Structures are given as structure tokens and as C-alpha cells.
Amino acid sequence: MIPVTKPFLPSFREYEEYLSSIWERQWLTNNGPLLNEFELKLKEYLDVKHMLYVTNGTVALQLAIRALDLKGEIITTPFSYVATTSSIVWEGCKPVFVDIEEDTFNIDPTKIEAAITPRTSAILATHVFGNPCDIDAIQAIADKYNLKVIYDGAHCFGTKYKNRSVFEYGDICTTSFHATKLFHTIEGGAVFTQSPELLKKLVFMRNFGHNGPEDFVEVGINAKNCEFRAAMGLCNLAHADEVLEKRKTLSMHYFEKLKNLKAAFPRLNASKDYNYAYFPVLFDSEEMLQKTIRELSLEKVYCRRYFYPALSTLPYVTAQEMPVCDSVVKRIVCLPLYHTLTFSDLDMICRVILRVQNYGMTTEAEEAAAALENQIKSILTVA
Ligand SMILES: *Cc1c(COP(=O)(O)O)cnc(C)c1O
Image 1 (tube, rainbow, N blue to C red):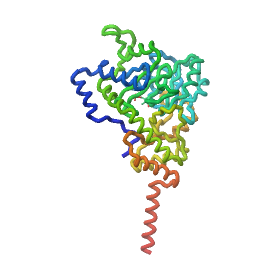
Image 2: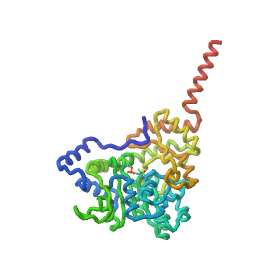
Image 3: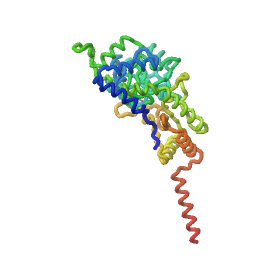
Image 4: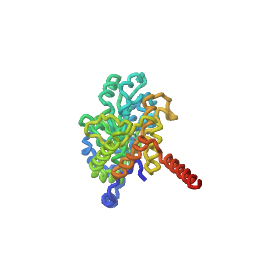
């Protein structure tokens, strides 16, 4: 069975060493030494000024909306994971969708201004598949209309934009370290900001608003993370370069093998430091996509329609037509991509995909044709 992704795991020995130290100290959570070490090392690795490690990427988004005190409407993308939209609604704001670019699948900055109203307080955009949005264009609009900018950088571990970590753009950027992401701490996430004031506010918000044991300065929530996950983060951080390198090699192999495929791959906005977090393929038609998915599943290869459906069709938002996004969601699929995917499996996946394109003959159809042929043969033999 080949799933769309598999979590990276360090050797059990590596994790066990950290576990022993936790047992010795008996310090399980609340800003423990492993958590501090992880935050420091991760900041250094990512080359970012400020970062707070939190429970998950969804809470990171909720904290960002709260810390910026956003109200009213938030302009956002219909092409992302559901958490991008649900966080806006959860925080009592209204998502207003703006369609995406056809070639990057990120929010289209040329369509943002038309969606701005006197109630708009911010833009919340996702760097889809780790490919940065047109950050300069978005910032220019935000500056002109005095809007805040939040980036959902859940896919962006290791990606740079103009030689700087993509996490350092926007008023706040968030990320996720969920097990399915290319770098993970089982569950986990982070918020990044360049502003010391916002950082201070977020520190309090992450921990119930505590400023010392008996002093509460903010309405807070429990968004802190624990020693066990920090330990997984420390283990995985030691392998991060290796994981990034492997995904790049696998992706290049996919590009090479699929160069004759009639499909599109995203146009990259990243500098050379793109992370190859996913391997999306945009087919020409939904029919082609469905045929391909079916053929692959017959070979026990399971892709994922990522993202599907458009967030502008969620039952709890005001439905909006998004012509580009509505068309992309019907035709896009992410192919398997993970550290231990073998080249022979990758080759097989590409063979199946090209077979569907070149012969249009599905395995089922092939089997049916073979059965018919046998039937005819047996009739002829009897005759
Ligand atoms: C995974 C993901 C999230 C949510 O992160 P969690 O850590 O699972 O809460 C949010 N946005 C995007 C784009 C994601 O892919």
C-alpha cells in the first residue's frame, strides 16, 4: 500500500534518550527544558527572530486572529485546508473569499481590492503547498487600506522568499507541525511575528494569560505544548535537512518521469529554497483525474484530492462563486511523497498515470477486454 504521505519517524533509540531525561526530571510540560531547547534550536534552524511553539496549527491561527484583535470581515482564500476558514469563523469574524491564481493556486492579489469593504480588518492567506504568495503585492494592498496580514504557513517549513524565511512575512505567520507535515512534532504548531509587542501578547495568550502564578494580564487559552512533543521535534530537527533533500530528489524524479503528461504543476514563487512539501498535479479535466485516481487505487496507490472541496462551499460560510478555484479543486490531486517512498514505486506510479493518459485504457477495461477475448476464443473452440 502506498499512501499519499507517511510521517517521518526518527529511530526509537533517539526518542528514547529524550524520554529517559524526561523521566529523570519528572517535568512533563509547562515550559520545560526540552521545550526551551526545541524553540531555540528551531529558531536558529529557520533563521527567524521570534517564534512561539504552540499546541497545533489551528490554535496558532486562532491566536493570531485574537492577538491582532480582528473584527468584521477577513479576506481569505478558498483553496486551503478547512482550518484556515474555520479559525476565522471560530473567532467570530466573517470570511470573505477572493479567488486564486490559476498557476500558483495562491490568493490572487489583483482581485483583493474589489473585496475590501469598510468592515474588512485583515487578509489571511495560505502559502499553498509551501509556495509563497505574492507577498509584496499583498503587503502593498494591506498598507494602502490599513489591513493586517496573517499567513497560514502550515506547508512552509524550510521555504524562503527573497532569501528570508517565509515565516517572517506578514504581521503574524503561523505553521503546523502535525504528523502529516514534512517536519512534525506529532501534533504542534507555531506563531511567528516580527513585533516584540505582539510576541509578548502571544506569550501571555498561550498560557492562560499568566504573568506569574497569581497575575493574569490577558484573556488566554491553553495553547502551550509539552516535553514529549518537543522531544520529537528535537529528534526530527536533526533529520530535517535529509528529509528536505530527499523530497527534492523525489520531486525532480517525478518531474522527469511525468514530463510528457498533459497536466500542470504549480509555478513557484519561492527562491531556490523551496521545500517540496507536496507533489500536486493539475489535470486538464475532472474525468482524467478520476480515471487516474481509480487506476492508482487498483495498484493500491492512494492519492489525495488536496484541497477539496473549495472552502467557499462550506456549510457555515456565505457561498461565493470562485471560478478559478472551483475549477482547480475538481482537477487537482497530490501524488504520494514521503521520505521512504522508493524510486521503483515512484516509477510505477508514473507508469500508471501515463498509461491512463496514453491509452485511456483502465485496468478494469483491460480486464473486460481480456474476458471478452477469452469468451470469443472458447466460442470459436466449441464451434
Ligand atoms: C495542517 C494545516 C492546518 C492545521 O494545522 P493543525 O496543526 O493540524 O491544526 C492549517 N492550515 C493548513 C493549510 C494546513 O495544511
